[in-house]
Image 1 (cartoon, rainbow, N blue to C red):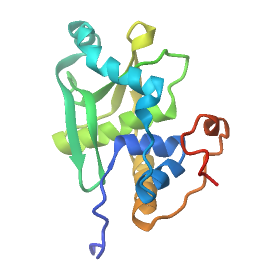
Image 2 (cartoon, rainbow, N blue to C red):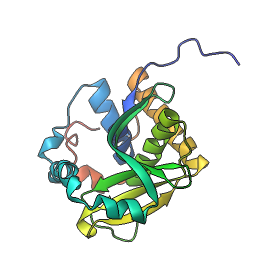
Image 3 (tube, rainbow, N blue to C red):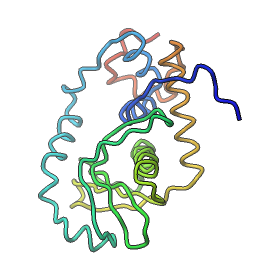
Length: 200
Protein backbone atom coordinates (compact mmCIF):
# COMPACT_ATOMS: atom_id res chain seq x y z
CA UNK A 1 0.00 0.00 0.00
CA UNK A 2 1.50 3.35 -1.06
CA UNK A 3 2.08 6.11 1.48
CA UNK A 4 0.41 9.43 0.74
CA UNK A 5 2.93 11.96 -0.51
CA UNK A 6 1.82 14.93 1.57
CA UNK A 7 0.44 13.50 4.77
CA UNK A 8 -0.43 16.16 7.35
CA UNK A 9 1.99 16.74 10.22
CA UNK A 10 -0.65 18.67 12.19
CA UNK A 11 -1.34 17.36 15.67
CA UNK A 12 -4.46 18.59 17.46
CA UNK A 13 -5.47 18.23 21.11
CA UNK A 14 -8.34 16.37 22.71
CA UNK A 15 -9.64 19.79 23.78
CA UNK A 16 -9.78 20.81 20.10
CA UNK A 17 -12.06 17.84 19.40
CA UNK A 18 -14.36 18.85 22.27
CA UNK A 19 -14.53 22.39 20.87
CA UNK A 20 -15.32 20.96 17.43
CA UNK A 21 -18.14 18.86 18.86
CA UNK A 22 -19.56 21.99 20.50
CA UNK A 23 -19.30 23.89 17.19
CA UNK A 24 -16.93 23.18 14.26
CA UNK A 25 -16.34 26.91 13.74
CA UNK A 26 -14.40 27.13 17.01
CA UNK A 27 -11.56 25.34 15.22
CA UNK A 28 -11.64 27.79 12.33
CA UNK A 29 -11.58 30.88 14.57
CA UNK A 30 -8.85 29.48 16.83
CA UNK A 31 -6.53 27.96 14.23
CA UNK A 32 -7.18 29.76 10.96
CA UNK A 33 -7.90 33.27 12.28
CA UNK A 34 -5.83 32.90 15.48
CA UNK A 35 -8.56 34.43 17.67
CA UNK A 36 -8.30 33.10 21.25
CA UNK A 37 -11.34 32.18 23.33
CA UNK A 38 -10.43 33.73 26.69
CA UNK A 39 -11.91 30.60 28.21
CA UNK A 40 -10.38 31.39 31.61
CA UNK A 41 -13.33 33.72 32.16
CA UNK A 42 -15.84 30.90 31.87
CA UNK A 43 -16.93 29.66 35.30
CA UNK A 44 -17.18 25.95 34.50
CA UNK A 45 -13.75 25.87 32.87
CA UNK A 46 -12.16 27.52 35.91
CA UNK A 47 -14.03 25.22 38.31
CA UNK A 48 -13.06 22.22 36.21
CA UNK A 49 -9.41 23.15 36.58
CA UNK A 50 -9.87 23.44 40.35
CA UNK A 51 -11.37 19.94 40.42
CA UNK A 52 -8.32 18.54 38.64
CA UNK A 53 -6.12 20.13 41.31
CA UNK A 54 -8.27 18.77 44.16
CA UNK A 55 -8.97 15.26 42.95
CA UNK A 56 -6.15 13.86 45.06
CA UNK A 57 -8.70 14.09 47.88
CA UNK A 58 -10.80 11.33 46.25
CA UNK A 59 -10.40 8.00 48.01
CA UNK A 60 -8.11 6.35 45.49
CA UNK A 61 -8.11 2.95 47.21
CA UNK A 62 -11.90 2.87 46.99
CA UNK A 63 -11.86 3.74 43.29
CA UNK A 64 -9.16 1.17 42.62
CA UNK A 65 -11.06 -1.69 44.32
CA UNK A 66 -14.43 -0.77 42.85
CA UNK A 67 -13.08 -0.80 39.27
CA UNK A 68 -10.89 -3.91 39.62
CA UNK A 69 -7.83 -1.75 39.06
CA UNK A 70 -4.43 -3.20 39.89
CA UNK A 71 -2.43 -0.03 39.23
CA UNK A 72 -2.84 3.42 37.75
CA UNK A 73 -0.90 6.37 36.41
CA UNK A 74 -2.06 9.97 36.90
CA UNK A 75 -1.81 13.07 34.69
CA UNK A 76 -0.43 11.12 31.74
CA UNK A 77 0.56 13.17 28.67
CA UNK A 78 0.22 11.06 25.52
CA UNK A 79 0.77 11.74 21.81
CA UNK A 80 -0.10 9.85 18.63
CA UNK A 81 1.55 11.16 15.47
CA UNK A 82 -0.24 8.58 13.34
CA UNK A 83 -3.65 9.67 14.65
CA UNK A 84 -2.70 13.39 14.82
CA UNK A 85 -3.86 13.77 18.43
CA UNK A 86 -2.38 14.51 21.86
CA UNK A 87 -3.73 15.11 25.32
CA UNK A 88 -3.58 14.50 29.05
CA UNK A 89 -5.41 11.57 30.64
CA UNK A 90 -6.46 12.22 34.26
CA UNK A 91 -5.82 8.59 35.14
CA UNK A 92 -4.85 5.50 33.15
CA UNK A 93 -6.23 2.47 34.99
CA UNK A 94 -4.69 -0.96 34.43
CA UNK A 95 -7.36 -3.57 35.12
CA UNK A 96 -7.37 -7.18 36.31
CA UNK A 97 -8.46 -8.46 32.87
CA UNK A 98 -5.22 -7.15 31.26
CA UNK A 99 -6.95 -4.18 29.63
CA UNK A 100 -6.61 -0.49 30.46
CA UNK A 101 -9.17 2.30 30.79
CA UNK A 102 -9.11 6.10 31.02
CA UNK A 103 -10.71 7.76 34.05
CA UNK A 104 -11.79 11.40 33.67
CA UNK A 105 -12.93 13.70 36.50
CA UNK A 106 -15.76 16.13 35.72
CA UNK A 107 -17.01 19.10 37.74
CA UNK A 108 -20.58 18.11 36.93
CA UNK A 109 -23.65 16.33 38.23
CA UNK A 110 -24.79 13.13 36.60
CA UNK A 111 -28.21 13.71 35.03
CA UNK A 112 -29.21 10.33 33.54
CA UNK A 113 -27.07 10.65 30.41
CA UNK A 114 -23.46 11.02 29.37
CA UNK A 115 -22.79 13.95 27.01
CA UNK A 116 -21.25 13.06 23.66
CA UNK A 117 -18.32 15.38 24.43
CA UNK A 118 -17.55 13.34 27.56
CA UNK A 119 -17.86 10.10 25.61
CA UNK A 120 -15.50 11.19 22.83
CA UNK A 121 -13.02 12.56 25.32
CA UNK A 122 -12.80 9.02 26.72
CA UNK A 123 -12.67 7.46 23.24
CA UNK A 124 -9.75 9.71 22.23
CA UNK A 125 -7.96 8.99 25.49
CA UNK A 126 -8.53 5.28 24.87
CA UNK A 127 -7.05 5.64 21.38
CA UNK A 128 -3.93 7.24 22.85
CA UNK A 129 -3.62 4.66 25.64
CA UNK A 130 -4.01 1.80 23.14
CA UNK A 131 -1.20 3.08 20.96
CA UNK A 132 1.21 4.26 23.65
CA UNK A 133 0.85 1.27 26.01
CA UNK A 134 0.10 -1.39 23.36
CA UNK A 135 -2.85 -2.60 25.41
CA UNK A 136 -6.56 -3.20 24.72
CA UNK A 137 -9.00 -0.51 25.87
CA UNK A 138 -12.65 -1.52 25.88
CA UNK A 139 -14.15 0.97 28.32
CA UNK A 140 -13.62 4.25 30.13
CA UNK A 141 -14.89 5.92 33.30
CA UNK A 142 -16.20 9.35 34.24
CA UNK A 143 -16.19 10.52 37.86
CA UNK A 144 -18.89 13.15 38.48
CA UNK A 145 -17.51 15.19 41.38
CA UNK A 146 -20.79 17.05 41.99
CA UNK A 147 -22.70 13.78 42.36
CA UNK A 148 -20.66 12.56 45.30
CA UNK A 149 -17.90 11.23 43.01
CA UNK A 150 -20.31 8.91 41.18
CA UNK A 151 -18.50 6.83 38.56
CA UNK A 152 -20.13 5.91 35.25
CA UNK A 153 -18.67 3.26 32.96
CA UNK A 154 -18.80 3.62 29.16
CA UNK A 155 -18.15 0.79 26.73
CA UNK A 156 -15.79 1.75 23.88
CA UNK A 157 -16.38 -0.11 20.61
CA UNK A 158 -14.38 -0.26 17.35
CA UNK A 159 -17.06 1.93 15.73
CA UNK A 160 -16.33 4.61 18.36
CA UNK A 161 -12.64 4.64 17.38
CA UNK A 162 -13.62 4.97 13.72
CA UNK A 163 -15.96 7.89 14.46
CA UNK A 164 -13.22 9.59 16.52
CA UNK A 165 -10.76 9.22 13.63
CA UNK A 166 -13.34 10.69 11.21
CA UNK A 167 -13.74 13.72 13.51
CA UNK A 168 -9.95 14.18 13.69
CA UNK A 169 -9.77 14.04 9.86
CA UNK A 170 -12.45 16.76 9.60
CA UNK A 171 -10.58 18.99 12.06
CA UNK A 172 -7.24 18.51 10.26
CA UNK A 173 -8.94 19.57 7.02
CA UNK A 174 -10.17 22.81 8.63
CA UNK A 175 -6.73 23.53 10.12
CA UNK A 176 -4.61 22.61 7.07
CA UNK A 177 -6.88 23.92 4.30
CA UNK A 178 -8.59 26.82 6.07
CA UNK A 179 -11.96 25.29 5.26
CA UNK A 180 -14.85 27.31 6.77
CA UNK A 181 -17.15 24.72 8.37
CA UNK A 182 -20.89 24.80 8.94
CA UNK A 183 -21.99 26.15 12.31
CA UNK A 184 -23.61 24.05 15.00
CA UNK A 185 -27.25 23.16 14.40
CA UNK A 186 -28.05 23.94 18.03
CA UNK A 187 -28.58 27.70 18.08
CA UNK A 188 -28.81 27.70 21.90
CA UNK A 189 -25.03 27.27 21.92
CA UNK A 190 -24.65 30.59 20.09
CA UNK A 191 -26.12 32.68 22.95
CA UNK A 192 -23.07 32.34 25.22
CA UNK A 193 -20.47 31.90 22.46
CA UNK A 194 -17.37 34.12 22.57
CA UNK A 195 -17.34 34.21 18.74
CA UNK A 196 -20.99 35.17 18.22
CA UNK A 197 -20.14 38.72 17.04
CA UNK A 198 -17.88 37.55 14.20
CA UNK A 199 -19.63 34.31 13.20
CA UNK A 200 -21.67 34.70 9.99
